[in-house]
Image (tube, rainbow, N blue to C red):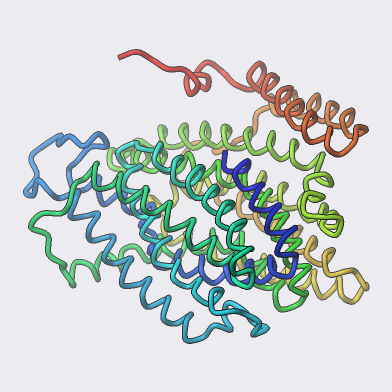
Length: 479
């Protein structure tokens, strides 16, 4: 749903605004989204543990006596206050130094106002995390997969005829504001307004310090998806960066699948950590890891095989970014083991997980810089230099997956492995179908080929990859 809703935006942004405007937009989003990540202070995942400690279950019922019946609401209010303070500080810093968003100094007033989305985005993330603790993932779907992308596409199209110099920035600000409004309305309905709540500066400082490893892990995990753009904007032009960002939007779809499982996986893991049931943690990580790997692999095949056609939606100049799209999709597939392992490591080995994450991003930054310089020395085009940055991401995330799975296996005393031979039975026939539809015209390759590849892949993975315990995920049970 999110990809379908994003396609009109990508088409409008590339065709109306052009690759250079898209590149400036990508450059600014790196800083804005990074500030939003820091402002949440790891509470997107840490809030689940905080709410669990308040004595309330995921359904909102008290399993036992607690001192404060409003403890859960107060915990959410504390989290929102911490996020607000940090978001304001981050926003002011970026406003005073707009070159952090636009290194070339080329921006309009509306593009500078993009900094306002830091607080809006961070508050929305906290609200959705609190709702996810109550197993309300439907609000996340409405906000992130319906309201946000469609508001972005519609506003971008309308803003071009009113204020083309800053239309993309205004559209993004409108989209995150609409999504956050949906999240906050659902939050108030679920938790209610805080009663008898007062800010507690000392407790809030302790909460901030406690969440520092989580915040670091979140920032590093986000950074592995964005450090390529951060580095590239200093070495390649705005147009080449816009083409790379265009490819990145398609490749980010598999990463969103991980985010869909994370809100529910977190609370389940916290309960098992509290009871010391390490075998259950290993089983859950392996099972969810396979689900994510299987889904990401299927989508990667469906997008990579007709990749030239997808990139061609932006215009003839965008087709040269196909190699970058393929490397980015590979990176998301190999990252699956790391992200699900981290879902447990943040509760059982926070600091060791953080050190591995820091090592991963240092490795990626070093490889990215080295590959870009090597590409320049070899006389490669700017777009191919960007593709090498995507390759650096794939190598770094593969290393992270190996290290984090080994660490988690040692802690829980069980093997951590997302691999199943059923993936081979699904990939081979799907690839053969892709090779056949590759002979069709580009429009037919996308309209007919993508559904055909996904259909064959899903059929085979359901038959040979999924067992009875996996198929429960797709069934509804009566009370």
